[in-house]
Image (cartoon, rainbow, N blue to C red; front, side, top):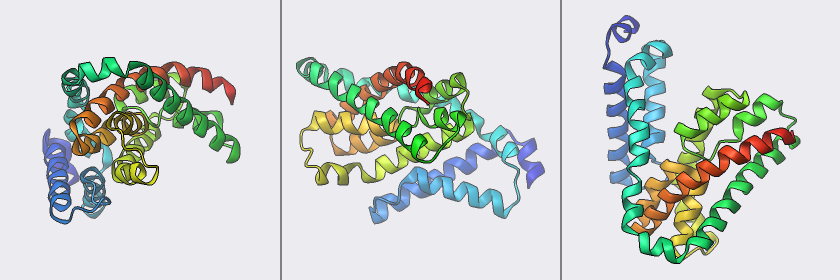
Length: 230
């Protein structure tokens, strides 16, 4: 099986897509927050690799083509934002302050955890871009000297958790305004969380899409500053 993956240019893509489709079907059928399609697909792919003893590098070489779609998929999130342009103009100040507050909270929490658990500088900067999209976060981690592979995993985990608990957190903290909900979700859990925001409503999805871009840009600058604090 390992040799099959090494020789195939599409086996990894097929396994990844099938796993994700299974996750989507499970989510649709049972409608439980924990049944996140991405989380299920990750578990299924890991299980497949372990059972059939497929080397990760062999799998990755035949699945890497999926990552080429990451940037276009992120850019396409501008479409719902364009459709809510008037709402954006009316709330531009509150939106910018909300995103900035979210970014500072994310970076500050990582700094606090680094001090609390005595992390090394490399481990600390690895976690700084945890709440921004993978396309940006990997570059930030590499530039700051972090472990890029771990950064990618942390970003995915953050997004999946955000997707799972976003609606619950909005209810717990009584966040009812659509703009506020979208900004909070996008700033905290990037594109994966935005998928949940889009399920909650068009405005939530549009504002979450905006938050991905602005929080990413703010984190690029903020992470560089915070990297010098520890």
